[in-house]
Structures are given as C-alpha cells and as structure tokens.
Length: 149
Image (cartoon, rainbow, N blue to C red; front, side, top):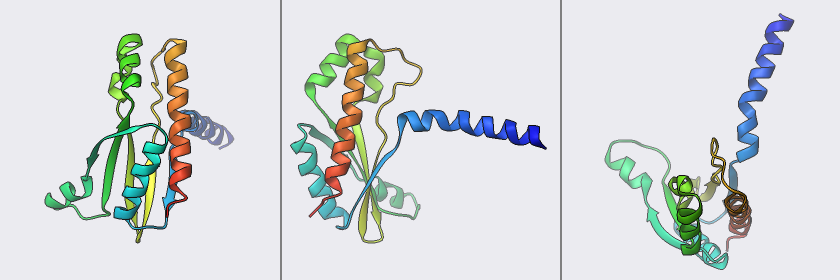
C-alpha cells in the first residue's frame, strides 16, 4: 500500500510540474462581458499590445447546438515580436499571436491566459527573454483587468 501511494505521489508531482512552470493566469472583473471586453482592450493598449482579432467562440458553439457560457478569445501582439521570433526562432511562431480568453461568469467576466511556454523547445537566450517578458506582460494585463470599471 505504501509503495502504491509513493508511486501515485511521484506521478502526481511529475504531472503537476509543467503546470506550475507554465501557469494559467486568471483574473475576474465584476462587469458583464461586453463592458469587460472594452476594458480589456484598453488595458491591452496600455501595455503597448495591439488587438489583432476578437473571436466570439461562444456564439459559434451555440449555432452548433452546444450550450454553455458565452466566451470570446482576444488575440494580441506586437509587430516587433513577430519579426524577432520569425528571424531568431521560427519554431515559436505557432505561439503567436498571444491570446486571452474572456468568459461570462454569472454576470461578471473571467479572464484566462496561458502564456506560451515553448515546452520541448530550446530557444536561444534572446527568445527565452522574450517569452519571459510575454509571461510578465500577460500577468500585468490580468492584474490590471481585475480593476475594471
């Protein structure tokens, strides 16, 4: 029994390791989704990112018969980041643009972000620093979103 518990503990810690390294970033805004989306667009611009696209995923799922919460995906980026990644480390291109997910949460709005981790990749130091900046920027955007008005 002790051996089985030890094995289970090791498996759980091994499975949990990437999640703690990557880390889902979440934040909540008391405003309903439309107002929260406007606030998030302002926050994104304040952090020098450009909104590239807003994808209303919840509406598309509803047309296919799925019921559930309304949510949207906001794609953001910086032109210089795209150029740097394309020039210095093209395998990272699938992680761009960065995306933020907004979901209706009983009249309030929940923001979820998964910063790109590039797991399994070995980017050069300049790109690793860029990825760390993205993580920091996304964390600050989520923090600022929490103060929605």
